[in-house]
Amino acid sequence: MTVSATTRRALAAVLTAGTLTVAAAVPASADDRRGDHRRDHRGSQSLVISDVRHDAGGRGDRSNRALNGEWVEIRNNGRHGVDLSGFTLSDSDGNRYRFSGFRLDGRSSVRVHTGQGRNTQRDVYQNRRQQIWDRNDTATLRDRRGNLVDSDSWGNRDNRGGRDGGR
Image 1 (cartoon, helix red, strand yellow):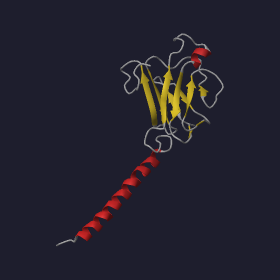
Image 2: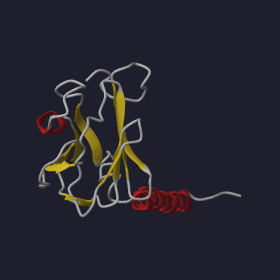
Image 3: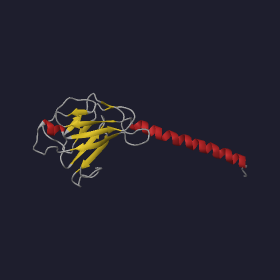
Image 4: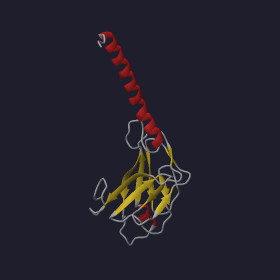
C-alpha cells in the first residue's frame, strides 16, 4: 500500500498537534494536585525554609531576648499569598509550632521566633520559655495535611538533607 506525501504530512500534523495538547495539559494537572503552597508556575518550590538562627546566646540563656534571637525563616517565593493556618514547623526533638490565622504574602518571608512577642506580618512567636533549635538539628515545615513542604538540617554531618551543613 502506497501512502501519498500529502496524506503522510496531514497524519504527521494531526499526531504532532495531539502530542502537544497532551504535553501541555499534563504539567497543569500535576501542578493542580500539589496545590498552591508547594510549587509556583515555574515549578520551583514556593514555600521554603530560607534561613535559620539557632542556639542564640548559648544553651543556658533563657532570657526572652536570647529566645527571640533564635528563629527559623520561611519564605514564599511564589507570587500569590499562602494561608499557613494549620501548617507546622517542628524540630528533630518533636517540638512543634502550629500556625493559626496567618497568611504569608507572595514574595515575602516570616521569622518564627522561639520566645514571646507580638505577632506581625514579618515575625511570629512560639511563646516558649526555653530554646529549641540546637547546633545539630532539623527544621521541618509541613502543610495542614502533614505533607512535607521543606526541611533544613545543620550542624552534625549525620543530619543529611540540609542545604548548608553548618550554620
